[in-house]
Image (tube, rainbow, N blue to C red; front, side):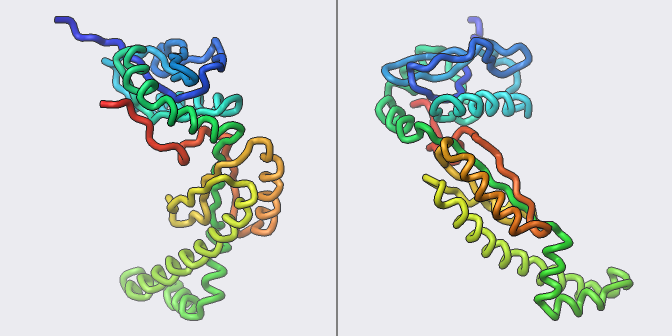
Amino acid sequence: MATATAGVYMFGIVPADVDLDPEARGIGDDPAPVQLVRHGDIAAMVSEINVDRPLGRPQDLLAHERLLDATVAEVPVLPIRFGAILTGTDAVVDELLAPNHDELLAALRDLDGKAQYVVKSRYVEAAVLGEILAEQPEAGRLREAIRGTSPDATRAERVRLGELITRGIEAKREADIRKLVAVCEPFSDAMDVREPAHELDAANVAVLAETAREKEFVRALDDLAEEWDGRVTIRLLGPLAPYDFVTDLRPEA
């Protein structure tokens, strides 16, 4: 018996009355066109894919996100987790769209005119270390004590200094998260404060906001960036699909 090699790769859910860019393509080395599978008032963005090929390369994830992020600039979209594949368009309807139609439609209506923005901020290492050394006399003394010495001879002092610096950054991070959240709050329908991915990460926040207020939001962040100039760098990503604010979509088993 022959083994099926074709499947349907799923990107996200959109309103049924949208029109896709005819140039939109899926993922893979020779990506197929993206098409809509409609059911009622909702539709799934899908493309054919060869299920024999490995899935999960960085370029596949980038293609997945590019399509969703381009879509959210035009219409509301519910992103489906990267890597979701069904056997065909009938399965998309039977296992995803039909069983969840009303819930998905309500979610799309709630997201109309909104997108995700991510504010990434990172400490300038020299600046934040200078603050900690100035604020904590013990840290300053330890810094001087180990200057010009071998790591083996001052191992205990170096460990203690590292602990003080880590605690100092954590305390500053807590305060700076509160500051950034307060700046984002007037523009936010929802927020997700992310855990630091790097020891010098300051306040990294995902914000669900109205795209019509993007310019106001950017101005508020520019004011904060000016206040934090030389101490913290700020980068704004978006508009993005609302990855942090949509329940994980999975077809019914």
